[in-house]
Image 1 (cartoon, rainbow, N blue to C red):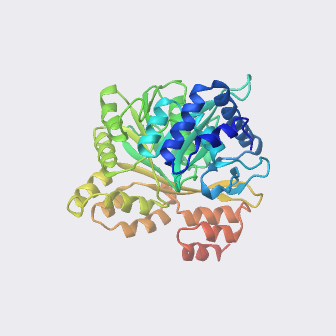
Image 2 (image 1 turned 45 degrees about the vertical axis):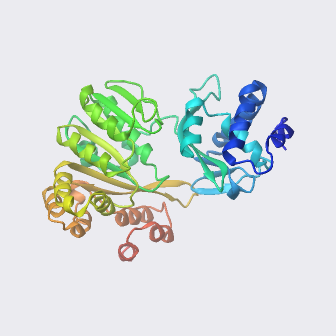
Image 3 (image 1 turned 120 degrees about the vertical axis):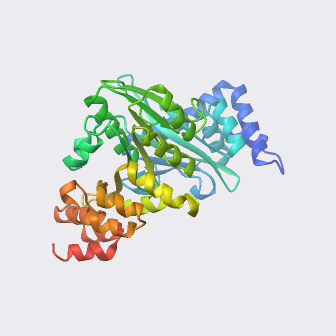
Length: 404
């Protein structure tokens, strides 16, 4: 028992009460007693402060699976923490509800899930720390994940992209085209996307519209005017925000995530109208990204989508964060840079040929995931086993490693 008002929480739970009624009863108790709410929030602050102390990327608590413990992901591994005692599920409900505003709670009670940003001040000498929260249900119990948002932007030059690719990402060199940053959850897509935004912000006089859910890193306008539009409070959907951006005189439009074919269609439309666009996708390779986008549409529409995709696509960056020999994480990437032969392969439904074009495209800044993993092994950054484990094509990476 960690909260002083735990016995009161127990009294709120009567026999056969529904989870929804329980959440609403605890929320009403917190709203009627500011000291209880502040106490619950103070426990959350302790959890988040500790994230910074151990350099964790994520924290999870609540729900049946955590066994009443607080879990952290550090350098890619998620483990239960011994730093905090166990928390009863009722205490966790109070802690989670204490950080949600009225709109977030309404969304959660209605949809059984809510994504939201959270800012906390850790020190008077530092900018507020930002987190992305996701509250959801597990076996009728409330649970949450918080992801720590980097307090600073990594310079694009530090990510190791070839000069040819940096040039294509720069509005000064290429005014039009769709760039996709892809990878599984936790692959660093947002970090790369923010680095690209920052690079253009420092390099060009332009207007950047960012549509996110939720907005994570807040960029300060430098040479660029930067607008942040949050799906929910500012705009109804990614698709709506994308279409509306056309009336806001943008040069660059950033869509935080592609979730459905309506967003894809909107992105292709605004790119085709002469804008530079960026977005992310949950796929593990450039080839998977092409297949995924096309497969989102009915077969009768796919020839048209292949043509529009080929004509608008500029770059696909597929990435993974892989463990180094030192126990940290490093970026491994696959880069596809569109050229006429790749454009023709997409239009003619010969996407299977694209991998070999990437494999042979070093002069255009292209590299396969297998080539990059082999490079990391040759540089002594990762083990041979790691290179094989994280490869999309294990047979191919083993062939490359045989010559190292």
